[in-house]
Image (cartoon, rainbow, N blue to C red; front, side):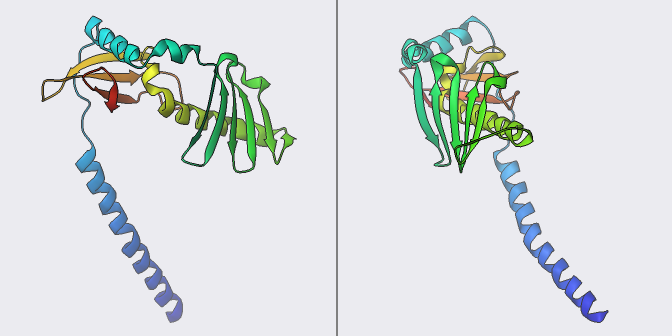
Length: 191
């Protein structure tokens, strides 16, 4: 019994020794970098700045682009037939051919073998979440007029204007907001 108590004390000590610094680090990061959303004004001026950004990005060429292929973090690979609303998502040994407008038509493959049932549903959901997140970071500036977005013009402390975009619906994380900082040519430089 004494040996068990000693082992229990060692494990409790290790647990505290490991978790306490992690919790302190997370708390520090939260309080250092967490800040309220800047206040901005919705309306014509915000929409005009969004249009200037889209023009600088050649939005018309983006709309005409039929096919985009990319890799995200060297883990998820995509072949997006934008004009057909179909995207093949690859990771590990999985391939999901997502029919973005009619998910029921999607197909799932593991090692090139077609999969059905619960694993199919699970992998389709996973592929949708990967696509929503990873394609967002690829084309986010082009999504400023998507359904459910709110645009606000924000005047920064240095007097420059920025564009605050809030996604009130859609995607995997509705409610997210991003402040786009534009250069003198209205190109997004950071967010």
